[in-house]
Amino acid sequence: MASKNSFFNNFIWRFLERCGAQLVAFAVSIVLARVLDPKVYGTVALVTVFTAIMQVFIDSGVGTALIQKKEADDLDFSTVFFFNLGLCLLLYAVMFFCAPLVSDFYGIPELTEIVRVLSLTIIISGVKNIQQAYVSRNMMFKRFFFATLGGTVGAAVLGIWMAYRGYGVWALVAQHLFNTAMDTLILWITVKWRPRWMFSWNRLKELFSYGWKLLVSGLMDSVYNELRQMIIGKLYTTQDLAHYNRGKQFPFLIINNVNTSIDSVLLPTLAKEQDDKSRVRSMTRRAIKTSTYIMAPLMMGLAFIAEPLIKLLLTEKWLPCVPFLRIFCITYMFYPIHTANLNAIKAMGRSDLYLKLEIIKKVIGVVVLLCTMWHGVEIMAYSLLLTSVASQIVNSWPNRKLLDYSYIDQMKDILPSILLALFMGACVYWIGILEMNNLLILLLQIALGAALYIGGSMLFRLEAYGYLVRQLRRFFKRRSKDDKAA
Image (tube, rainbow, N blue to C red):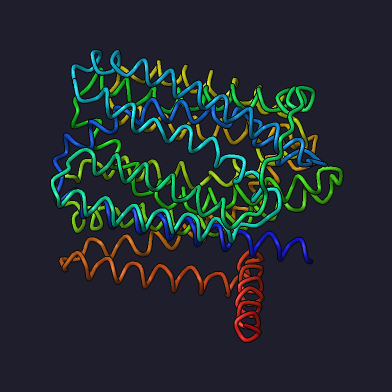
């Protein structure tokens, strides 16, 4: 019971942290978008493409290896800390000296200085990476809450102030750099672990033997995720790409909060139980059932209210993004299955299987992409539904033997939540065809959707609903006791 409570409590803190950061960032982006020219965002985006790829190297998979390892001591953490710091200094040197080449490639002279300054986040992230691994391994996710919100709020104030003072692109650069630095500083202050002056090549080799497969997997995933957008930008218009990306933005905002919270808490929890097959199976099943129960109504509801939502927030000129939004909602609704299955595989030390699965999925994805890329952006988007199903099957296949938990078993576990969410979505959709104010329509749809889903959960006694209610009661009861004690 203690382990279950620990998982749920840490999930709540991680979820609150992600939601708080996203809400602040979303509000700030609206303010900055009103002040800054879109070209400014495009300039920074050109640089963040490179820093995002570098970020994959920063982890090198050894951060995850620290979380997964049964007995990780100060020698392991200190070794990875100094290795990461050296690697980040090397990567920054590469970005520093290649900055003029990047500037010449895009024909934007000011990119040289922007690349050199923004790339400082690489070094800062190298320091933060080990602190994050320590927090995750020791299930101290409350630390993330304060660090992330501190960095996000501080960066928001700085970014808005600089934007109104006319600093242009440097407002976004300073915001991004300050956010990473403050996040790292707060973690450094609140987390008591410090590196010691010791290093072991043998320990590094041991950790890297597990982590290099995750590094390759991460690089493959990053390149694959950018490939579809690169093809759309090359073969079709920038408007097509804008509608595609905008349709992805809304469901991604939700899935990023929930899935990141589950992902970061689930791996260290499973890793502690890696020798107990039945325990790992039970926790994986719990994660799939509960997270799908949360994600299904959010994604299905968003898909069915897409049109009035887009009209209200973005105006009718963005209505072409509605089909893409609905496709991504269906695709992301099944992400908890991917997360739980892959974390179970990583927790049991099978990074070799993890890499093989990534290769199989990416081969399938590239083949489907090449077959559909000539038939329009919508066809390319619809192909995501096919690759999503294929990825679910591939990710769950090893756990058929590892955990005796097959894909069919998983579908049976989540089917009640999916069907109830589908019924809820179909009901709220019909409100959208009424000739009413878009805001009023949305409010009615959200209220009816929540009532139908919660009411249906109680009526049919969905097990995931009962579990969530019990855990939330325990969480708030514990918080109340802590407040009284304080």
